[in-house]
Image 1 (cartoon, protein in one colour):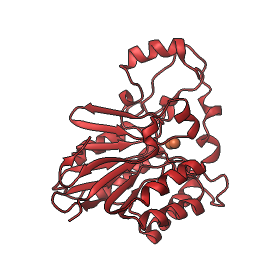
Image 2 (cartoon, protein in one colour):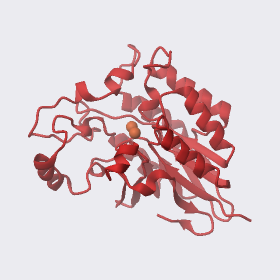
Image 3 (tube, protein in one colour):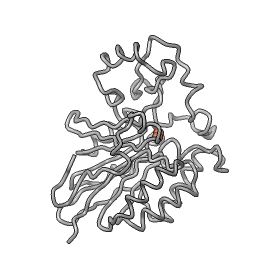
Length: 291
Ligand SMILES: [Fe+2]
Ligand SMILES: [Fe+2]
């Protein structure tokens, strides 16, 4: 029997044809026994997303997806707001056979794959925010960040967005997971994942070499709510994306892995690894975890 493998990637941004081609090339290599995790930021165009989904489901046994911030942009979608677009993405997943709910995979051994919806908490939610102050520059994040222009939320939403998305995961979290768990979200679950060094050291370096001093990524990075849910799930491995920085960290008993394809120019500049043009194998049912 062919072993089942679990592959993961995020931020494939298929509006770049080069990225789309690399994904299709990988998919067509033969993955009939495998599962693929796509952790958000594929495209804000639903027609392209549908094209991607239909192609992927024809090559993989399971394809799992969570939307990133780009999927929830409404700038050219015709949707009234980003919630309506989220519903359209759910419908697209259901129609194409892409999963946004937990699934148990594997033949010899088994592992749960658990998608987690998420958004970021800003500094006005200090209990959950990943905010790190840059005291060396004026903060112009509000003007510079695309979500504040391209995503639109209904007036009636009074709770923080990160809370809304976390609540949507609750029905899935309540079920018993009697096998190891691989969870995944688009956004970052911990502040210390933003940096490749301890926060204080990273900030000291950034104050000298920060290429974008007026932009504070920590304001739009993620939420501690995601980590609370990861720990309740008892995940062994958590896949995330969004920052376009590839990292692998083991923190308090959980491995956090970011394997982002990113933009072609980010690969040229070495901001994301060249090998991230393809999904990474994270688990096999003949050997277990491979990261
Ligand atoms: Fe992205
Ligand atoms: Fe993102």
